[in-house]
Amino acid sequence: MTRHPLPAGATLGVLGGGQLARMWSHAAQSLGYRTAVLDPDANSPAGLISHVHVPTAYLDPQGLARMALECQAVTTEFENVPADALAQLQQHMPVAPGPAAVQVAQDRALEKAHFVRCGVPVAPHQVLAHADDLPQVPDHLLPGILKTTRMGYDGKGQVRVDTRGELTAAFTQLQNGNADVVCLLEKRLPLAGECSVVLARGHDGACVHLPLQINLHRDGILAVTEVFEDALPAATAQHAMDAATEIARELDYVGVLCVEFFLLQDGPEKEALGPLVVNEIAPRPHNSGHHSIDSCDVSQFELQVRCMASLPLTQPRLHSPCVMLNLLGDLWWRDGREPQAPDWSALLALPGAHLHLYGKTEARRGRKMGHVTITASSISQARQVSAQVAALLGLPA
Image 1 (spheres, rainbow, N blue to C red):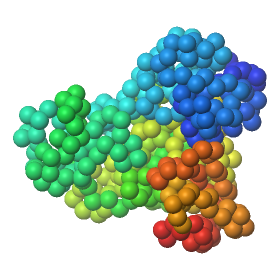
Image 2 (spheres, one colour):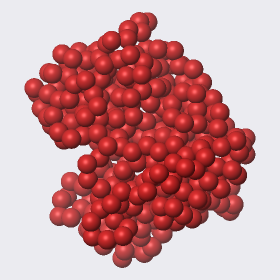
Image 3 (cartoon, rainbow, N blue to C red):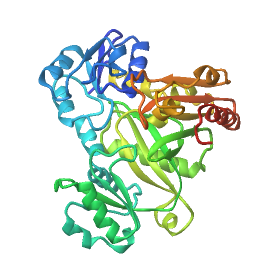
Image 4 (cartoon, one colour):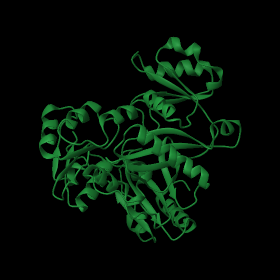
């Protein structure tokens, strides 16, 4: 079915009001759209800058009715918004991504099964629903990582295990007395690094993508992203792009999707599985794609707007190699018991430094408060300035 583009002045909605929704709102408003945010937090970063803020729970009937009245299309900011809320809104307007796709991303077992159906490489794994399943775990899955199948992000809901005793203890810990908690054990592979593909797929099946991103995590949270031409061998990069595209196609996905990959070290696992395996998907713009605001001619947030509004999707072009650093709330607590903002003026004096603060009213340790993207004419220059930023802020080199 042909969809006509939504005209400027239409209202686009989002469930969730954090930093992703805030940056999406900026992109939507720059194209002339009104924005509406449903988020229970009266001070949510996106709610503070949107035309309409509906401060209710995600499944609140009155809140959903208000969004249905206000909006001509709706998206979600994060995968753990109830899929049923999206399904209810889908009765009134286009929802991108759709609830069926979001449901897959909400459950690691469904997610892994989808990857297998798509024929893309994944780490060996096994779903563990009950304690009785533990003796059936084959030896080759240890050492591994035990994860809850639902509600895990930024390293939460997972435990590294080396032995069967540790596996039993971790399963008990993650269930925490709730027998309904299902876990997934994934073989721990020798990793050479991590990368991600952020793509956008329209209602008509058209698909474009950001340049491939090389990522570094610390304590389960993304810390650094680098983007530059030829970051990986051409065949490996194409393999990642093809796998991401197939995952989106098989989901009949509409919107921005991030597919995260593990890069494997040389050895028997790499010979068996190939140069990379799929880790997980995020049905939304992603932290590793934030650089695109400053490094590309079309950002991931504008791509999300274009998907929702049935506007043409153009292939983003990288105009500046870059390094992106995440800014966590720990930086506000460096020098004492009271939070204090870092010296942004010193950072902004550096060439190519683009600071983005998310408007959060409280700085907490581990909380994503902002990011800085350093653009330059070469990745070596971007890395040099990035090292200066890290030194100024007290970040690891």
